[in-house]
Length: 120
Figure 1 (cartoon, rainbow, N blue to C red):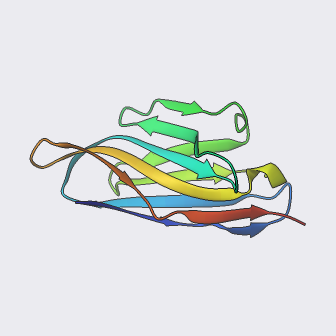
Figure 2 (cartoon, rainbow, N blue to C red):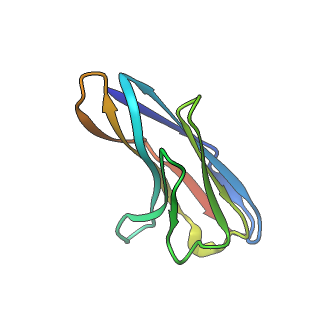
């Protein structure tokens, strides 16, 4: 089992910043990729940003230049720094991890989600 615990969501005014954190724990031998997704009401879940174990990152076009994903391999934790937030960034943000467990099995896990609301 792999558990993901997210934190850092909340209410922020347009133009403000938030930092999300996601810590992975459990029978982890190697974290291959961690990512953040989001889902707004009435919309499908979409990929926001991802980072590989080697540090390669990718971003959705809608957040490029505003969001930064980073990781701390010593803590099995990934962060999403969100700047210049817009009302359209309002969504539930989910952490996702693709890991290899101690028995060599590939596992994909999701966090419980954290609400981000951008509103004045």
